Amino acid sequence: MECYRTHYSTEVTTAQHGCEITVAGWVQDIREMGSIAFLILRDRMGTLQVTMLKKKLDPELFKKLCGLNRESVIAVRGTCKPSDKARNGYEVIPEEVEILSEAGTPLPMGVVDKVGVDLDTRLDNRFIDLRKEEVQAIFKIRNRVIEAAHGYLRGNGFIEMHSPNIIGASSEGGTDLFAVQYFEKQAFLSQSPQLYKQTMMATGFDRVYEIAKYFRAEQHNTRRHLNESTAIDLEMAFVRSEEDVMGTLERLIRHIWDHVADNCTDELSLLGVSITVPSLPMRRVTYDEAVERLAKSGVDIKWGDDIGTEAEKLLGDLMQKEGCEFYFITKYPLEAKPFYAMPENGMADDRYARAFDLELNGVEITSGAQRIHDVKLLEERITAKGLKPSDFEGYLKAFRYGMPPHGGFGLGIERIVMNMLGIQNIRECTLFPRDRMRISP
Ligand code: 4AD
Ligand code: MG
Picture (tube, helix red, strand yellow):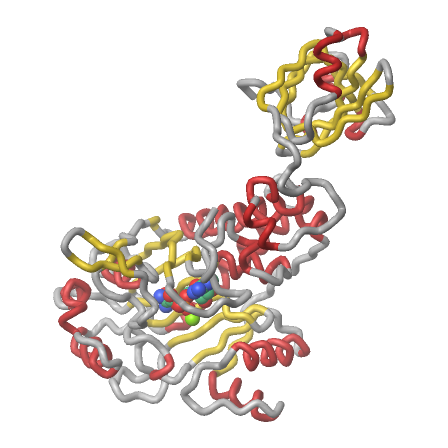
């Protein structure tokens, strides 16, 4: 430890009892009782009690501290004394207290108050909202999810890449792009690293991944969409079919769940969540089977259409009754998937694609596919989607001089965290959400 502190609150052990320590953090509460005052100091790890004795401190400082606004930042040097009554089994008797930053008053929202505030107020004051331990828990878990992904993928021969976020043409074929002025030209913010991770398959780096940013100008304002989201995106070459990609995905998911279960016991119990590490293989349900099951439950989907949110939720309920939290939906109609998805038999007019989604409790967390690697077929599919191959020349070129069969997926990080923890609104799973109405803070 360095700087203003020697210890975090919950790190202090009996070995420090009787010793001098320095702690620093936010003043959560102060109770003055004449010649003694109890100050609760909060840091990243938890809270501790500072017991201020009037006779041991400069009287001016004692007075000042007793009148200090909540959430001010202080550093305390003092003796660590065992105490049955204090939290953590010790208290700090200060010899020196330094006020590092005084908080204004009133606070825009409370940190420990029992009264709830609405999500907008919380997001408007995210820096305070994030001082709450249950909110911090979400981001500590998110951090472990990403740590697990890096660990698993690097351990399995994937190399991390960073693709450009300023792009010249749409990567998913859709219209949901944010336009940006790029000198004399029109450019866009990337919807996904799709075209670049595929391009990497032509380089010899045959396994790549990226913790990617997706920028999507989707107009709708839902509980599970953000206009700026984050994903674990990967691409792998020399696959025989989408099954090879699905195998990697399910092993990655199992590793993430394992890692969170092992490393986030405190955070999970604080949030009242217990998670079950999925057993493999995960269930595979074809699109046709899904449509049929839904029809039996009274929900009709026109063959070829996407499975809408409500139907997806219902399918999730049906699958949960069979003990499946996770399941793949496979063999989508070709028309329902982007131009780069491999047709089932390699023909431009095939009925099905080698494409899949991974669902968790009725919410899509991943889309993936084997991709087309034959440039003629790719041009045909781009045209069939009403797009112009000439707009994709930079991408298509990489397919003309030796491109191995490949596939990959995009796994939404906020979607993982949201569904792993049973959080209702995806905005809670990103620090500073961007949605239809919000661009600040
Ligand atoms: O299903 P999507 O759009 O697929 C792709 O982007 C492909 N390029 C992936 C591939 O490699 N074939 O996005 C992938 C995942 C979704 O399943 C979802 O988890 C997340 O990214 N996602 C979003 N999360 C929050 N808000 C949004 N607007 C999202 N869009 C996608
Ligand atoms: Mg998708």
